Image (cartoon, rainbow, N blue to C red; front, top):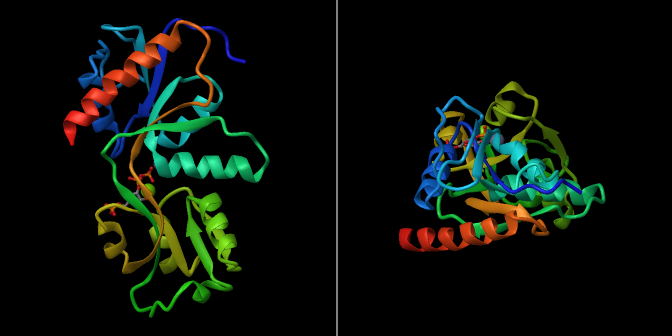
Length: 226
Ligand code: PRP
Ligand code: ZN
Ligand code: MG
């Protein structure tokens, strides 16, 4: 178990689609930090709530290890790492506490434009490139499809052209990346948005009160937005 702390730590994405809206949301909740954008650790001024700027992929693990108390991350990343943990028999270590109404996207299968899509049975024996191997493997298994999952950490959309995969499974937001790579979306595996993630058990120290207060403020702010 992690040691007691009296300050809260929230992890958000340093760069990328969720970085700016996550910071604005926390500012709207009354949090402030004095540091510049380049600092990866921002010391909370208005409240004892510090900010960690990290890669979104690292956020679930930081919560699981008790390094951070909250994180703002895509449901896609949380579900993938949750599915990966379950596949190796690890217990759930974090949960999505609130949907945040931004960062909407879909995890989708996409095939080369010239394919005529007839259904999932078409995937038998195919190679699928993805950064979401656990979600994809579960999805394929549920449908009894025997396809090969090729894991790539980025630039997944280029795999069909390189010949390292036949199709892909990746996030689609505007659809511009798919279109630019002559791919078309055919199946949705997951609807995603940014969520506030937290531990399965609330810490037994000063952080509990801070977490409850922040959730209350967040509920006020997110409700006002929609
Ligand atoms: C996703 C995905 C695509 C892109 C699609 O990456 O991997 O590359 O967004 O967006 P579009 O449909 O608007 O073109 P993301 O921003 O999540 O970055 P990451 O994979 O580096 O975390
Ligand atoms: Zn990422
Ligand atoms: Mg990407």
